[in-house]
Image 1 (cartoon, protein in one colour):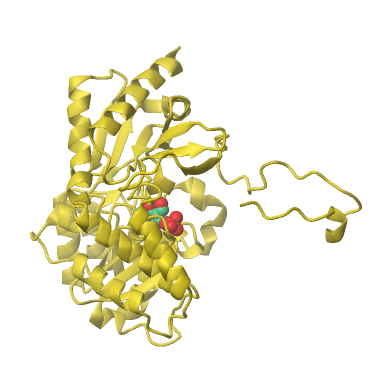
Image 2 (image 1 turned 90 degrees about the vertical axis):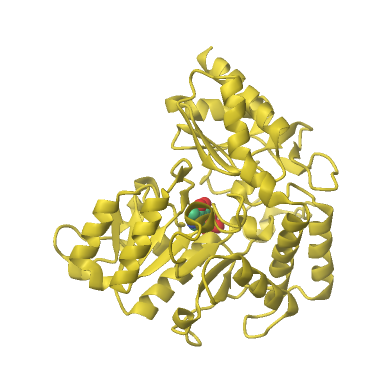
Amino acid sequence: MNPPPVASNARRGHSGPMAPPEDLRWPTYRPTGITLEAAADEHPNGSLYVRAEDGRRYLDAVTGIGCAVLGHGHPAWARAVADQAARLASASGTYITAPRRALERALVERTAVPDARVFFANSGTEATEAAVKLALRATGRSIVVAFDGAFHGRTLGALGLTASPAYRAPYLRCMDEPPDDRFADVKVLHLPFGDEAALTRAFETHGDRIAMVVVEPVQGEAGIRPASPSFLIRARELTRRAGALLGMDEVQCGFGRTGHWSAWTAIVGDRADPPDVTWLAKALGGGFPIGACLARADLAAAMTPGSHGSTFGGNPLACAAALATIEIIEREGLLASAGAQFDTLRAIAAEHPIEAVREIRGAGAMIGIDVGERGAAIGAAMRARGVLVTVCHRTTVRLLLPYRAGRDELATIWRALGDGLADADG
Ligand code: PLP
């Protein structure tokens, strides 16, 4: 699969041959030393394991950070992508294509937003950008409310909503709240996550200028923290009363991960009116890059021609991948298996307690295991024992398994965690 090497670096203006370093990536990721190659085995429902270049086999609880929800190499998904690639891979958003039309319909039927219209992007952060642009245009207001711990993306607009100082600090002036009382210029108001009183106060003070309240129903990067039903219901009441929008960032927690197509539905059900805007990415393509933002039709009307766009957004290849993902999730009953993972892990933890585990948080196939400050070392120790995980804030081992993973895989992970903790102690 490697492209052929150029004959000589001299062709690029260098004076002579020069061996490039092995790893040519920007150093934006902490290296693991693992080069992944392929699904570890052929499985009619997708492999839960990946194989590295050195032949090692790993249980994959990272899945491209929540993307490969069907596992790796699912034959029906791969066939759908290959068939579409042979038919029509690229088409601008100006033109309707059959996969795009079918996916729009499928998403409108499965997300909580009523009578929605759809904008397609290529990633989660772009979906956030679309949601914010829509909220500003549809309401004519200037404040967006976001919460501590939130992660909404890394492009400069979305970064204004993302909480982590590590991600924001170098770019703060691009989109942030000014100090003290210069509220006329505020664009993003950051409030404590889950704090109904703080949200109520924000509406008392700035209610008529709030365009949208943005919530991750289950915060992901923060270490898997579900919002309470009462917080979401309160946010709905306050936004509705003030004429502001309620936006659900379901990039990580949506598209079946909670056991429901929509995380809002999993948490709130029909106890409140649905949100006005919601957005998805990650799991949506089953591993193919695609994001989507869905908004009520009357709000979407504010997005007139030229007000937004994306070259690749909604291309037929990505839409075919997402359609195949939906079909497979439904055919194989994967909402139910995703929904069961959190309770299964808690049952395993109760049977085989690990003293160092402080807390297990989650919803369905989105699980955070809080192990305290040794998180980073434990992540590495688990990799050494054949399990790939990500670690949030150096404290929380995060599991974003394929939806069909069950008791066997969760038990393997729990064992690797216990052994990894022993390694880190030793
Ligand atoms: N929103 C949430 C809730 C996320 O978890 C992420 C990524 O982790 C994003 C937005 C940004 O998505 P992407 O990395 O695809 O831009």
